[in-house]
Image (cartoon, rainbow, N blue to C red; front, side, top):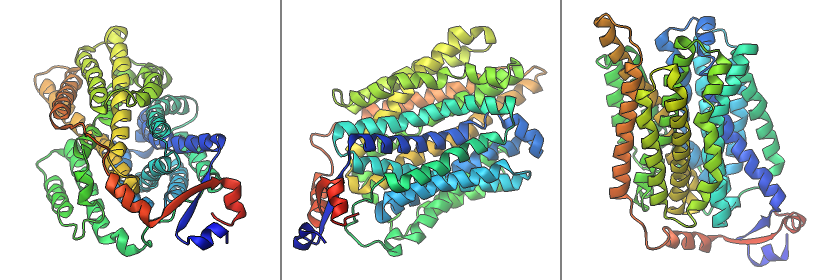
Length: 504
């Protein structure tokens, strides 16, 4: 034991990491976020092959996406709690390993029920990597500039995963098979887990001793069940109709379960009292909702109506993500000069302009005049919203609850995928039924109506941001940060010195 530890038993010796190691750590965190987005978007080009191979009906195919999104969203809160209480490193690497292992199983599936189950298990693994990854960035990049940049790159990796997933999935479908869309994920998840073990240092000890009681298994189980039932209800409603008992009953039960958490430890109420957290969480509904609207609407249109190949379709979708790369680094620096309220509003404005073009993109001849500029403008705006809302929610909360805060924001992101697919499917099927009843071809009208809904949603979010976002006079959570630091003092020493003293 070192002299420092003998004199102050509560002192935590934090190793000072070199810039190269920190860069590799950030790359691993971002690669995990890339993988989580990739595993969802890569299946869009594969859906027709999977429907044929597994004999899936049109309604059943939505569960390939919903099973993953449901467990992803539902387990984010418990994953955030685990990361905050037990440490983020092991939560992160176990999650990455689970994604890789269950994706391997998905690739060998010849039964649709088994595929749905393994997709749901993959969602649990993915849920473990996101709050813990964000928490590790907050912990090991304490400098505000580095931290904001790290969070921006983390979000940018998800955006890149969305678009490259579509492209790589298209190549897999055209030149191999749909099974490789899962096996490529395995080739990412398992190495991420193995590299994390030696690369990422142990986290600082928690002020309170970890225990199952602090985790509040009862509370997190209620919230998890509530989210799963809610997503099941909205997904089933879009597929089979909203007036059925199997839709109404889960919807009512989900609301009831969400209201009876006895200890509120799974999602502490104090989270909502930090400045601007509710409106920032609501803004989390936008980015993935907007992207999934593009993929869900245009990919079947490009393949079925325009008769483009899977690769050609994927290439035409590239602007929906690649332009986010151009603004990912800039978006993280904006908060140094402009309050996040105004940068987010600027991003929303770009989203609104782009979405206004999409209802008129009703033919392949309008790809370059309407679809391409909408993809380019909208994805840049979306990236600005995503990055700055993500940064702002951590700026307004203390680092001790970074896991649960990251879980709340990402729960909104993932829940928006299931909600987006359900809403767009309902709008399109309703309009298509009307057109068929009149003896007409469904055409583009159902897709256009879906984008009018997205536009209305963006306008409501922009108004809510203007009305409810408050620019704080001082940094939030200062008192809590000071109280936390009083219980455990963190002293930084060079990493080699820490290891020599036997400190992990």
